[in-house]
Length: 354
Image (cartoon, rainbow, N blue to C red; front, top):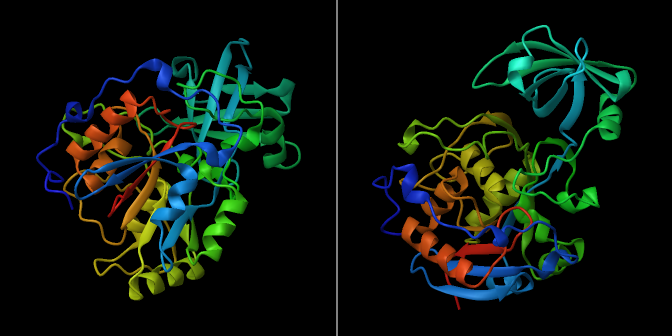
C-alpha cells in the first residue's frame, strides 16, 4: 500500500478537486471499448495514457477479473398524488419484500405516511408506509399482473443527476453481462466491455468471476460529515456463488491477481473475504466503507471510472493507490481532457505501469 494510504486524511475536504463541467460525459461512446484508459501504478504513482483495448497488455494469464452482473431496473417513477394531482417522483432503492421497497420520494414533504401515488393512469399505485432512515420511505405497490413488466413499461432508467441528456438506448446503461435485476445504478466500469473483448481476454488465460451487488444509495450518497469516519453507508445486497468463490480462491492459490471491475465488485469481495483472503459463497448485505487506512484482504488491482469530488468512491480508490497518487492522476486526466463519471473514460490501478 502506498505510504500516504493511512488514516491521517480523514477530512472530506481532503478529497476535493475542481472539475470543468465540460469534462462530465453526457453520452456513451458508440463503441464501448473506444474509451481512453489512464493506467496508474499504485505503488509509485507512475501514469500511462492508453486506450481501453490496451487493458489486455496489463493482464497476465492466471489473473481473474471480478465483475458485477447486476442489472439496472427502470427505477425512476413519475406519478401524481391521488388526492391533489401534485407531481411526485419515486425512486426505487432496494426491495424489502415482494411489493415493499425502500425509496426516495420527491418532494418528500408532500408524502406523509398513508399518502397514495398513482402512476400510468392507475396501472401502478403506491402507498407510503413509513419513513425509516435519512429520508428513505417504505412504499407498498399495488398493480395487476407482474411488477417487473409494469415497471418496465412505466419506469425510467435512473441516470445520475449530472447526466442531462436523454438516453436513446437503455442497454447502453447496462453491462453486456448484466443478469440479475435489482440495481438503481449501473456498475459503470463494466460498461466498457463487449462480449467480444471478454472472449479475447478469456482466450488469453484471464478468467472471469461473476458476483452480484445490487447498487443502491450507499455507493452514491454524498459525504456530508467533515470527518469521513462519521459517514454511514446505506446497506446493499450482494451474492457470491460457489463457482465464483472457488475461482477467486484458486486464482489466489496459484499466485494470480484478483482484478476488480468496478468499485462495487471490490466492495463485494472485500465484504465477503476473511482475514486470510479466502472467500466463501454467501448472500448478505454490506455497508462497507473503504477509505485510506483500510487493509485490502484480497483485491490486487482495480478497473474503474473517474469519480466525483468528495465521494466515497474517490476515497476508496485513494485507499488502494494513495490519496496523493490519485489526486495527481486526476489532475493529469483533467489536463488531458479525459471524460469523467458514468459514461466517461476508465482508469486501471495496477502494480506495474509501462
